[in-house]
Length: 547
View 1 (tube, rainbow, N blue to C red):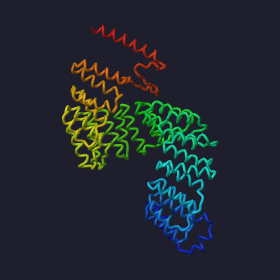
View 2 (view 1 turned 120 degrees about the horizontal axis):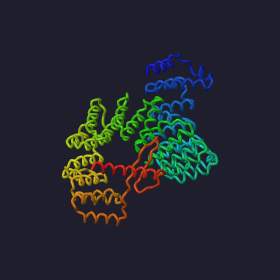
View 3 (view 1 turned 90 degrees about the horizontal axis):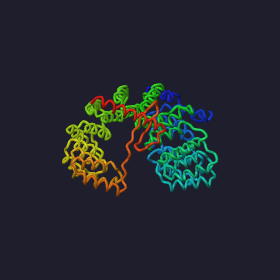
View 4 (view 1 turned 60 degrees about the vertical axis):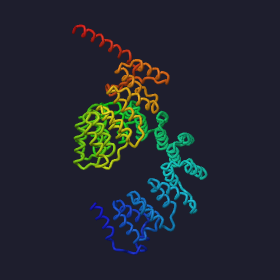
């Protein structure tokens, strides 16, 4: 910061000379280079004000190109109101200056103003150019106002700019953001010349729409791919909880194109590893992060903690946590969640206390994590303390997730009356998670009345969830209510509810294998059952010898 201030003072150390003597006799590129160097050192509003004074004293603010450069930097630093004031004060802005201001507004909460400013271009007698359209279409996409977008599309067509790839790419992005994915694809198919950016825009549109199969089909057709192409498909599979396919594409990227994964690809791959418990690949990614010196990237380190925790290696997760010099609230929350997942409630509580001592403000997700930890260790009093201090100590308003955690704590501990009272008193309508917690509590306590009440509500919220019926059936069985259990199975049959098959996965030699009951589709199916039969016979022999 001190170096920047010294450089800015250096600019102002020049004796003032009339602009007609010095600036008008220099090539136009000289003031631009001079101002660019000056603006590159700006980081505060004081710096911006000094740079503006420098321009005013030398008449540089009358040059639209130089003023555009200043407005762009001013907006990028967050001083958008100041930039807008300078623009509005300009008597004769050109299209270039309009584009700069539209670009600034389109990427902020003032996107609507960007559209209004675009409309002013034509009203002022100018013609939008190839930069105007991509900038304003970003504003349209941000606001999802497809009626405005289709009007701009028509203008692009009338001006004969529809074959311009950056404009068409912006249109594809706009239609995708407005969830008009078929319109986006129609426009994409009409383009005779496509670059990798346009392909990526269409793939990203499918991913955003949740249609990862079409995204993958388009990806496979691409004549050339870059890291964004691969990352979009990997992220798409991960978002749709198709972790095995995400990992398969990640591995294919390493083998085929020799493209190094970027941070987003690594984050998506780590998320997929966490979903499947694929620790071997997660360890490889960890090594890659260390090798590329990416350890300062907090989101990546957070993803590593999550991956190790969900893959069963909680102490490796804690090792990563302790190795971090800088941590965000997400880091602390992820580690607390990891401890909760492994039933290490005391460790989660200790970490929460450490976070408090380091003056880190917990958020609503942190409280979900710590309440979940209290549920795992069955500590009702600790759960009550955390729940009650949320609002009073940290000004975090309890949401339905927090009520759900507290109801789960009470239910597991057998405090059914208190749990039901909390459901009645909370300012939300109970959702499936709330009734599910009560149903689970009813199973633990063999409470038929509560189980029937909970299932009655769950049948309305998620009628096809077979697990809910199974829990009540187990409650009936625990109370020797076999007739009621039979009636419940009939209800399931009449409603067409099928019991979801059980599933499991295992990682072997870096590859994740998934198995589902009643599924004989695995290529090693016969060999697996041959080994299982041998193990079964071996167990019978051992049992016979032991008796």
